[in-house]
Amino acid sequence: MDKSYLNGATAQLAQGIRALIDLRPDLSSDVALNESFTRFDETCRITPAIVGYVANKLQHETNTPAFTDRQLALLMLAVIARSSSTYGTIPNVVAHLALIEEHQDAAILNENAKNETGDRAHAPHPTLLYDRFAVIGEALAIPALTPASYHVMRQILIERERIGQPVLQTAEAVEDYFAVNDLHVPAYTEADIRVALHYAGRCDPAITHLHSRIVAIESRMNDRFGAAATRNPDDKAWLGVRRLELAMREASSVDEHDTGRLSNIGAWGQIIEHLIPQLPLCRHVRARAWTEAHNDEAAGQAVGWEGAAEEGHAEDARTQAVTMLRTLKPTTFAMVLAEVAEFNALRLGFWDRVVRDLQRLEQNPRIPEAAVAAE
Image: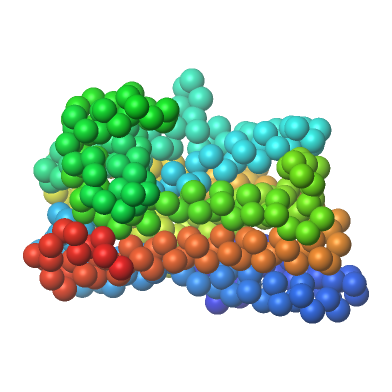
């Protein structure tokens, strides 16, 4: 397998698409399609900046912490922001497939979604993620985000960005804002608002906007020439983008510990192992649970997949995406690849921005907090 790709799962996805294009003269001879594939393929070979940053920080064994408290707070915020843009992806595709009567494919992905979103007997992955940060926050005295405080923080940043002024500075002002505006926020406490205000003054607002931008790009497809006035669920371009986007997300989340090719999830696993000596022994299982949920080989093999559960998710999503791409005309195929390449670039850019902020904190730990959020 070509080692220049992010991992083996990503290589299988990109090379499977390339093979499909090469098999059909109408696809292989289409200039726009080949240009779109080249861009897509390029994004499949780029390792997220956070992976290299974490590896570099941890390569030297020392008795001093590799990350400051402020860097850890930023890292916790970043992984929550990045993950929250992913957890709704599988259910959205499942609903779309069910709507167009593709029930077998929907059932396969829905089974995978249960691994992510949980059921009555299993905790959802987002719960494991927030619980991990609660353990870190308690041990290291760092304010830990909850689902409520994260969403309160997003609303604060969105409103500040909207009007261009540092409004909503107090818990009272935030509660008044929610009372006036019709916005959904998970059930929150005054403590959640205080934590939200703490992070809102310390982060780049762009960190929390990743999924909103992906939704905006997907919505933009409705403006293309020849698109229906209303979104048509049978539109192959829209469905193709959703399926390939899911396949890319799943593939890029696979960790290959034997080759050292890790995703942002694997990088977080390395951070946790670095922090483990600072955490109470009774909290180690909780601290590791989120990463281990993605790399559970026993769970994956129990249902016939090779490797961990995440690899099985990638295999299912890749099979469905490539099967659909096989039915597309060159122009539609090119559009799908171009859109997903842009999504890939957005996610890579997200981690580039996070690493720049981490480096600023590293170079000047006393940097004013407003400057951390500056571009």
